[in-house]
Length: 113
Image (cartoon, rainbow, N blue to C red; front, side, top):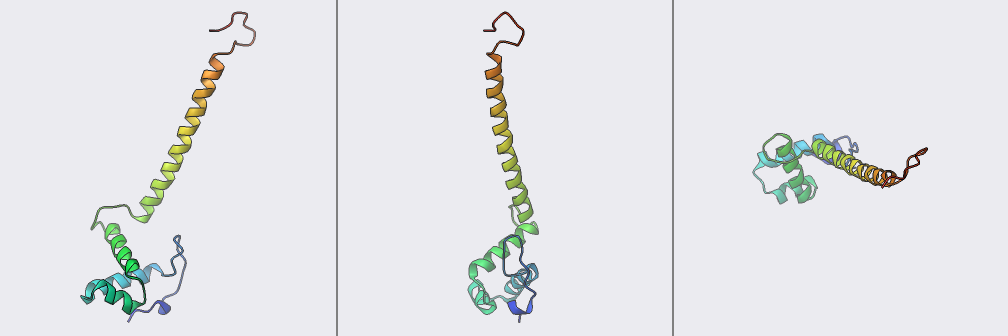
């Protein structure tokens, strides 16, 4: 029987107390056992939501269901943040261009309208 205590506990980016190997093995046991999600989760000492989520993530990772895996989701967040910053910088530059377009040039005697 797979036990959490038998696996070395390493913290991932999500601060999960369960190592990746434990999650994969738990999903494999669930799928091979023919037991209900609740029964297998109780047997392993984990929540049904955890086992359900691990199963869903493995399916996405293995291309069995549509969706983004953790790495793709992380990249999407990074790109969205970067896009937001670039949009803000563009707005600042637009406002600066409007501001400076309305000012006379140094050394020019003719005001710009």
